[in-house]
Length: 125
Image (cartoon, rainbow, N blue to C red; front, side, top):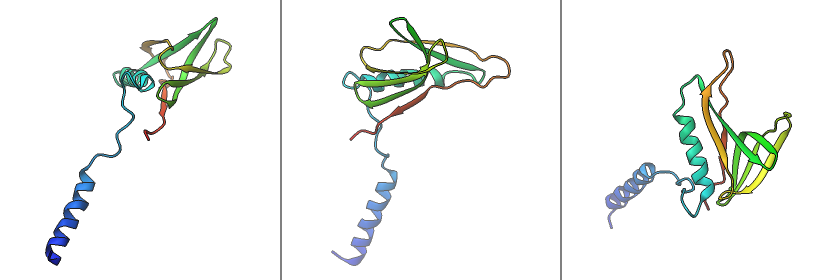
């Protein structure tokens, strides 16, 4: 192989790696209910106007939590963080396929900034 061919091959490989997409996020689907739930919430938030917010609540027993963050440390596990009716910071650790979230889009109070749910997932291995 000539020096010109080696240089050309190296250039093609370098350019190819620049155009290849980054590591794909964790796929949603039946094998990953956490990603599926988070994908739905993200889609609902993305559809909102600037003067709207998505109020997400999680009901567990007698407690109702206004969700501020959803963390998916594993494909079938969610850690939901928010505030209960008394304003106390509350975390719920639950299987992703068992959780029920109530999502209601609505207007933001005048002068207030819309709340956006923070969605955090661990990268796929």
